[in-house]
Image (cartoon, rainbow, N blue to C red; front, side, top):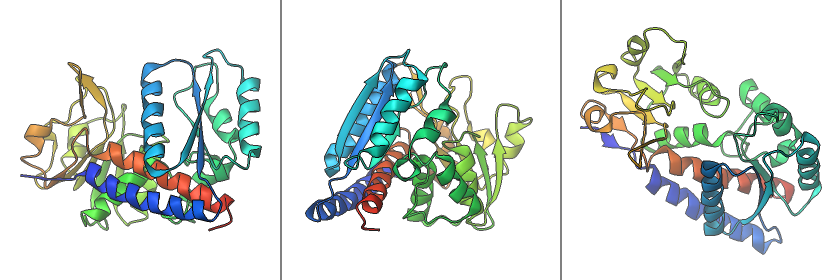
Length: 289
């Protein structure tokens, strides 16, 4: 039976360390502060912002929410971002995604100052990642991939030479995770909605990462997993009022060597890495790098 990778417990360890470092910064006159921009009233986005606010308060980071109407113009949101970029009391800016269709996500993200980009999505930070000129502990990387790598490291899972399959090609998860794992000398295959013979790819994976979130249409079952594989489930689905991942957990845990639960696996690590990114931006802008 697989060892369950407890992301919630590891995230608490990271949060305690972040809290300690936040207090150190405060003693030196720097009060880490995150500004979040929430556009519209989409329920899940409001929930996610609330969770991030709680996390920030837990470690002593100040949290400001800027709520904008769903029909906000590009000019209006740019003006707000420009104000936050110029505000020396704001160390990080988080743009809650997704945005309404009339706003161009890339344009809006690019408006955020790269040194305040706690999601690691600004072209400058993406460029540093793809050029390989980053330090995972000191630079702004997307939170979910960073959290996955930290979780794998904690459980001492070897990456060099391993066949990794990632079922996701998004800018938030699949693409940055691909690069992080390539830099650890893994052999990485990216699968997506147009991939043919998905099962053929997944059965060859020493490490399988899935981040689809379309259950019950999409489900990773035991027959799709190699014996002894490491299975990292990033999917978030709501089935009969309960949160679950992309993986049929009960059957796959009998076959895998390591597996992440949902909830309690990658999600808490993602949130802990966001706090780390806020700490990084606060240190840099406070002159403590």
